[in-house]
Image 1 (cartoon, rainbow, N blue to C red):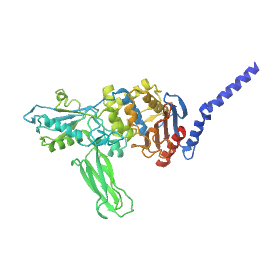
Image 2 (cartoon, rainbow, N blue to C red; image 1 turned 90 degrees about the horizontal axis):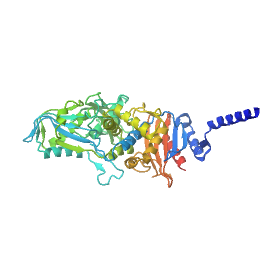
Image 3 (cartoon, rainbow, N blue to C red; image 1 turned 180 degrees about the vertical axis):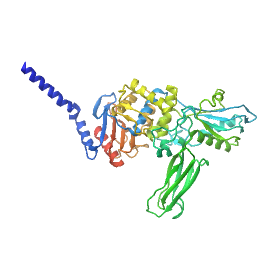
Length: 495
């Protein structure tokens, strides 16, 4: 009996010891990855890493089930959910209605543009091959298509107002968790049922002709949309550059202040505008004027879904469709376009839960992750679609499970095409160069303060891809150095 007790104690002690050092800890893969993960100064940071095969078998893990701020790896959730729940050919329709009759070329009422979440009214390429037929759009192409359709219907004069109606989505257009300063910029542009040019204006600036002169600042599209003051000055070459742009919250009062050295190259910024529905209506009004169509009333906007309900019950005067879902997904993953991600999240809410809101979109994502991907319901806590807020929390295991699920999904083509490829156009263009992985890593990047992430696939000659998720939190390394360390980890795992 005493002998059996000693054996039991020995077995228990051995099991306890082995639990501290899982089986993979002795594998060549684990030794390679541990060396990279434990290099100073990254040994003071928190790493979350999962490596699995495409069938979901885990090959390596560290802190796989802890919460991490994922930054733009959050975009994997909204794009994977849309890939699985919406048709690859899904399109959003933008319709134009009249509140009165159209007779003798005159619309006896308001002209109402009703958007259903189309983000593709912009100037953008939707493929790595920018020379491919149909890959790129010009800024005005689809707004002009609406105007041309109205002219073809015989419209020559709008007797009332021109109205941008964004009520397909919730009235709340700015996320509560986004920082106030961020609201000035493209990556936190407001999210409504209508959107033009990413709900931003392109600002190009450069030094003035001499010291003391204001900087030269131009806008595109230049439709006299806002009140602007140039408070900048040009200074001598080699001096600090301090130029910045500001907007009085909720208004169209914009100004620039600060200094621009003479030797500064031209820069381009993308500045968000507060009312996407009014912005769209202004853009259409501009195009209609070019075609000789006058508007007697003002330019207005609304997010009240009841205001023009009766008008929406009549046949539309004009309709234009968005690019398909696969094209909407492309900028979200390939170039990490935040506004597209938020528009898609609200679209999921409207299409699958009947409400075009952040809250409804998150509910749809959550149900998809639990029911379809079979992830732990306590392993993620999401707030937006883009990853801009640090309130998003998710485990690396969930990110890897999403990728493995999507790899096996029959509608995966658009998702895989959109992922940046190492060495090709996109956010991995300058990474993994001169390594065996150039051209063979497809992954989504992520970066906010003290956070970097990379999750995706490593292509292999046989056996399907490696699926991985790497999330680095609470580090103080330089941005470029953190990326190099993450890339070294991917190279080590692929050896």
